[in-house]
Length: 171
Length: 186
Image 1 (cartoon, rainbow over the protein chains, first blue to last red):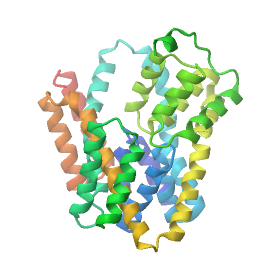
Image 2 (image 1 turned 60 degrees about the vertical axis):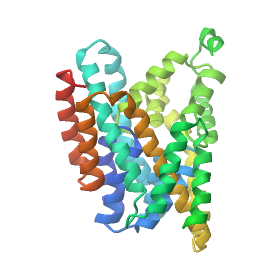
Image 3 (image 1 turned 45 degrees about the horizontal axis):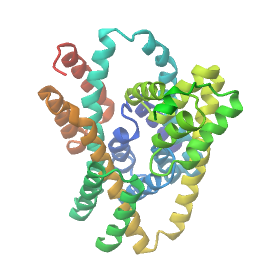
Image 4 (image 1 turned 90 degrees about the horizontal axis):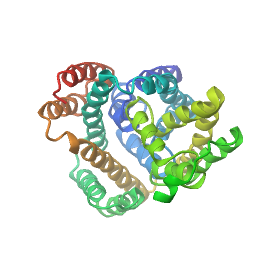
């Protein structure tokens, strides 16, 4: 049953995932941890960490959440349902988008989406850095990674590695 | 860069070429997919010009769904129709899907080790920091627009603090934001 629920919910999330996976991370956490209790807060941040460190689109984190909920079928269902509705939209919109190149609506839509995406991604970062009770050590690591990303052109893998080292020292 | 732009580009020869190109993108994409997508499609295989690439990614960034996943759908369709979309998407996901599950299986076996758990939790916190950094980067051009700042703050309060569902916040937020954009506030 949880497999069907997970699939349907992720498919709904797919439709509102403007800005990609970072935007929907707070909602995934809310649903699978707070509402359903399928994962603990600690499970969730660890699945996220492994997904970030592995190569590939970060949407694969969804497959790890699915894996924790329902094994291999869960991994396939979670990845498929978070991607498929959005893929159908991309398929239809791509041509329309070219056709309305000079429409004022197209420009309005582009401008309207930007602040929502920023708000969602910011929330995603803060929620992920706060699994369970607030912990200054996790916030410190997150702040260092954010600063490192903004101040340097390092491959993000180095910042993740630094986070791992700090984790070993502090946690 | 300028040489790349002047060289004529040719779309992938066939579905096989498209598939191997996207497999190659996925296989190498440690630390983020976009730079590898650029290197493979624009610099190495010359499927796309720099301008085409930027335009396509620009579109995919504000569609729902993973950016690079959307790009595989849009480009696959442009070159080979529906079969192109399917082939490009599967090529992109195939190896990373195996990597990530494999890594997670190995990790799950070892996760009773507390040091390893601390390291991975630290990596997760750093990953969260990268999201915050991304938000700041994307938000900078909006900083001089009060309406945009209000919308960002409202999203943050509702989603991160009040934990309201995205299924409510996104449609309502987009509606309000669209009105603001049409009035020239954004």
